[in-house]
Amino acid sequence: MRMKPIECRQTNGFKETAMNILQINASIRGDASTSTRIADDIVQRLRTRHPDARLVRRDLAAAPHPVLDPSALQALFTPAGERTAQQAARVALDDTLIAEVQAADALVLGVPMYNLNVPVQFKTWIDAIARAGVTFRYTETGPEGLLKGKTAYVALARGGRYRGTDFDTQVPYLRTVLGFLGITDIHFIHAEGLNMGPDAVQQGLAEAGAALDAVFA
Image 1 (cartoon, rainbow, N blue to C red):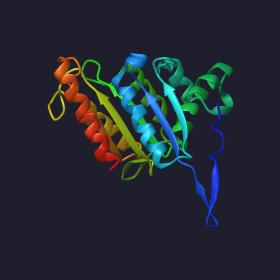
Image 2: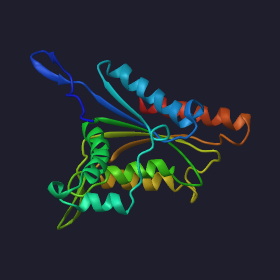
Image 3: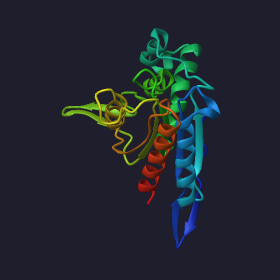
Image 4: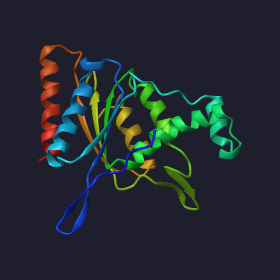
């Protein structure tokens, strides 16, 4: 799938490019997902600020992306002109995800915590978009991310309260892998304690709401 051209509008003699928003939902809980609801809230706030914004929304649980397995790796390392039809189709699936990220000005990521880490479907998405020479490159001074100039908003939902503890493996991982790709402007919105009883749920959602208000103040 190719992304459609970004719409532009004329403002005081200059072309103003409409914002592109890419929303990635990683929860398997569908409409019951707190991380997805917070991600939806982030998108709504962005659209309030940018009424002409265009949205691409991808549900990684409803439409799982194939994992990086030996056949996929072989397809990636086979020169484009020498790929079989099956290999070309497999690479094209990753190309679609990469094109979505490249076109995006803002990434909105709904990421719940499963067993102290990101969901497997989210890791599969990362494996698909991280491609040497395309979204990052190796230089004489080390790797350089090629997805610069983007802002990421990460909605984190956890059953316990892990922020700032050794159990929070998500934030260091996400900050590192997104930074590796060139995305360093990152806002984390935490909703924690969601399996710790009604009062904890209310507190966790209130904290998430306050964090959103601060980000979009």
